[in-house]
Image 1 (tube, one colour):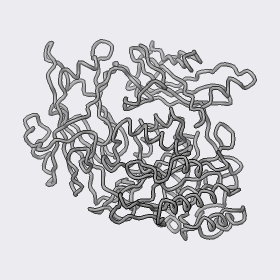
Image 2: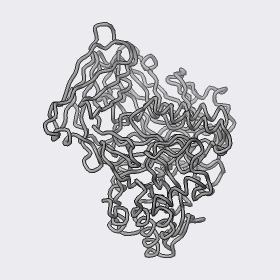
Image 3: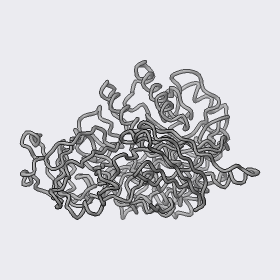
Image 4: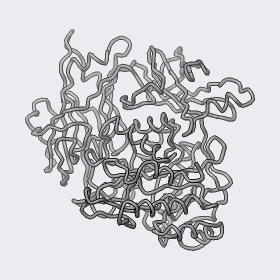
Length: 606
């Protein structure tokens, strides 16, 4: 089987680090119904004879609150239903047969709780609004003799807008958006697809490069044990040239293997293979077990902290990041298209940033693919719940584990952020249970992934953070310059209260190896007369385009001039609802010439 190089992929495949040729996208028009009385299960809406219960049409994967869905209803509808017929022609396109006899139904994300029926038969359920799930539906798609019958797929999605123990991020629990929250995203909001696989199939690949040893460690998870005689083969190539290969026995469901890389000569080969934003080099991989063969890729890079600096590939690297909500007015949390995801990553690069903090959202893996291929550092962040209960703790932790597992191998991800601004742990400074929970999330993340720095609580009230991040929406560039202009002035923040009146540390002493970064600042609002927004809002406001440029420029210049800060994250990339504090409008038009923004962002650290 021949696969294209990572650089040649177009990002349409929903799971870009584990690609098979035999798949079919199930996006497009589905039948749809609201179930405000929540009696659909009792009335068997999942049955093949219940098609008349579905009185609307929705375009998947756009949430019903969004215009692109074709519905655009932002009211409270806690339960929704979807229905679609999979035709024989679609099944024919994935080529089930001797080589790939089993069919898997995949969901990228359904917010928040999903139940699925195929051909009227219940196949399973999943809880978690941003994590993927799948079901083996082979038995439900069995052909009648030589003729394949059409079969229904029905999805019930439950998303209670009033449930604050549900990890929801920036999705509002009020009927209309207020403050810094915005319209909800209910139901299917990432791709749905069918895939044909072998009886023994690869489910997950974790790549761990070891730059010092000159090896790549692989952990391969199978859907079932392969048998005593089975072999796992990994072949790595770079720029079309063989880079390394290994064959090991495929024993058990999880197989570990180490692929040696070519011997280095004077360090040249080593440098030529490294991944960075300036040189986003990717190593292509083909992994095979028995009849199953998949395409993957990885980046050779390391991420760490030491001496008060962030280290990329063991060298100090200044982080110039922007906060990205990943929200579009026409499609909400769902991407408007694959091209929209690609354009978003490219826009961030064009504006002069080398990193993005994905704020309060588990992003579509295709965006991570474009970050990998274009060269963009990513901070992966958990959506918050807004109450502290055993249910909220369990839900948040379970989904966080799933996402770290899903995104482990993306070279673009260099930092994990399980908690932000004490959201969901609002009494962190005074409640030991909340401190223990925040610390436990850090330890759990490092147990799952020891290769990346972790921030316990971005912004303030740090418990155990590899990076000491600060949120500061001071409007004056002069004040910012003074506040971060020396080690002694920064020391005062950690000895007392931070800019938001919160303690910066709530457990232990300050780790001098931990970099200090200003990870939310700016937030300057500007809206021109042609694009006025009701309730337009920011942390400060500009009166004109030139005033906007001056204010943003002064804040960025003060931050870049700090001898203490190891990086920053500017708030924010795009206007989002009533938050009009983006560098670009909600339709991604720069408020100031791109070249000028790039100049301000890069400064002397370019």
